[in-house]
Image 1 (tube, rainbow, N blue to C red):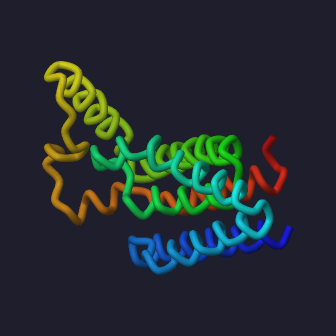
Image 2 (image 1 turned 90 degrees about the vertical axis):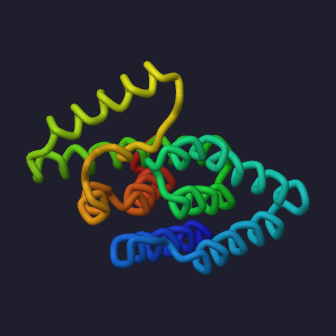
Length: 175
């Protein structure tokens, strides 16, 4: 139970960093990784450490394509990897799914509040048509015509959905 409280504290601090500073500091991620891997080694020995490393790499492999097209930040992927150090592979994947669902709800609410749902959906479908037509990936938002400051406003801070998703799942509210 104490390790889950530590994980929740790590995620809460990461969410605050993401919202306030638009980034999750690498020093915080390293601290989270050390805590998770140390716990895995202490609890399960070498095999516990190996499983934590496996669980840690799953989010990296699954989320890297989203990073490559600019839909997810490197800090978000590193945060999910650090979550993996504390959880099993199955729990990590489930928490990722819940986090993406919560992120989608946040995005929909933001688009409704900013009254740009149709504009964002039009851009998404245009992007998908261009990628499908050309057969080549490009950065999402690359040709949106918006300046950098407006693109920042369009994004959600994904550390918050990650924190909520892990709390809901590991807290027993979602099974």
